[in-house]
Each structure stands twice: as C-alpha cells, then as structure tokens.
Length: 171
Image (cartoon, rainbow, N blue to C red; front, top):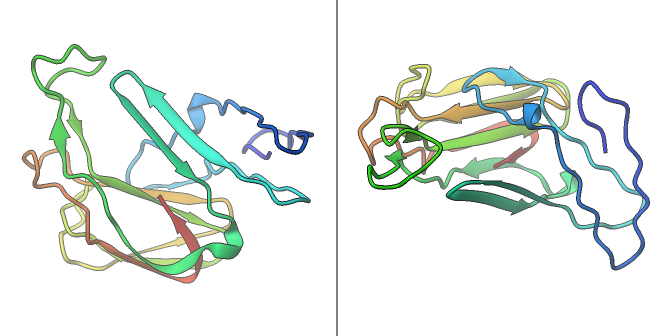
C-alpha cells in the first residue's frame, strides 16, 4: 500500500483472510475543485478484493474498490442532493451545516484530461450546465461539491456527465 509522503507498506495476507488498514485522516479530500495528491495505491501480485469505508457519527460510506483495469472513460454521477442535519438531531455538526452533493475523480495516468458538466452550481461557483475541464496526473484526484449556498434539495449533482481521454475512477 502506497500512501503519499510515506514509503510503501508491504502486507502479507493469507488466503481467505482479511487485513484492516487505517488510512491517516489527513488523506481525506475535503477541498472542492482543487487538484489533490491524496490517492492511496494498492497493488498485489495475486487477485484480491479491496473495500473502503468511512464512518462518523450519524453517517457511513463504503464502496468496493474497482481495479484500474476496469476503470472507464465516461460516467454519469448519481449523488444525493444538498441537505442539512435536522435541528432536533444531536450531531457533531451544527444543524445548519449543509451536507453537500459531491463526486471525486481519480486519474491513473499522466495527462488525463477530464471534462464534466455540473447539474448544479459548484462550491467554487462553476455554473450549472457549463462544461468544465481539468487535467490530472497519475495519483491525483479532484473533488467537486455542490454549492452549500443552494437550498436543501437544489444542489444535486446527479446527472453530471464526466468524461476523460484516459481511464478514470469516479466515486
């Protein structure tokens, strides 16, 4: 496992067993529309299954990691619309804190040109329906969040088209 800024960490895992790896919290990508190097690379000389999970109070996310050989060039985003924690919910975030619609793009090769057309205004003000472009290199990612200023339900990035000249992963 290779984490940016660290030496690769080898793991030897017996067949039919599992290994939990805790990724440092500073690897979480939270800044919208800025190229980031926070990509964890997992390699193996035998077939493996990799799952990612993030869990916090009142929320959890997980997914099966797709091998780079199966990455594609064209995606359509399915995301949740902006919403907020209800005022009666006791939570680590203030009730008015907006949970934003979002997606993350990961490049596996240098010079990957990505084009996307957001279906809602983005956090940094990219207009709804206007095609955007960003170039990523291997091991880089790009997070897009809906504007937190949009009313509940209006900041939905679902339907955003994402395409690239080389294979990408989209979460």
